[in-house]
Image (cartoon, rainbow, N blue to C red; front, side, top):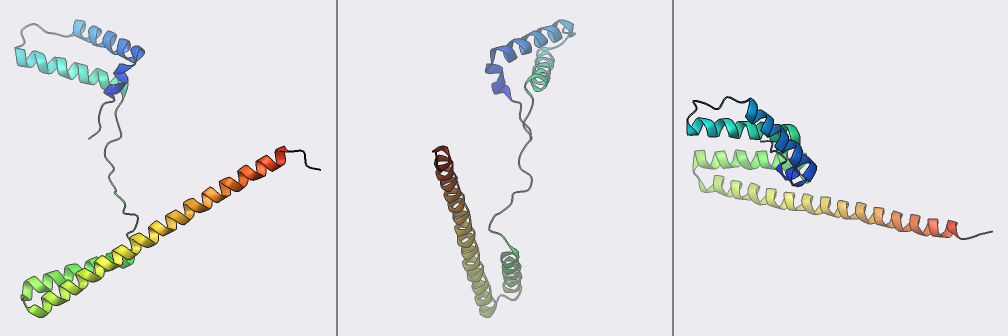
Length: 148
């Protein structure tokens, strides 16, 4: 659900513009003959509409949450675990339960390995960037000096 950027009303210019537009709309509105609740709803709608026009809205929540460590191996392990769970619930045997527990443990280990591997890759990437930045700083200092 997108939200209105009401914090922009703290800025003096924005607040003044908002106030002027609301006052104009209130003068134009038909307020006579309305009950208290109707009057309140109309005023609320008018103020919210003006705030959206003046301040804008957010984009809304992220629709596709991406898990950075998820890959095909993990997806396959999840499918196997679900199948084993269904088999265990359907058959209700000790062997089926042991198979389910085995697949659940394998999934936990696999996802832990993937998270560690991806975290390590991210750290290596950031270290590489930091080394490149240090090298470029050294290079720029070296070039600034008069070298013949």
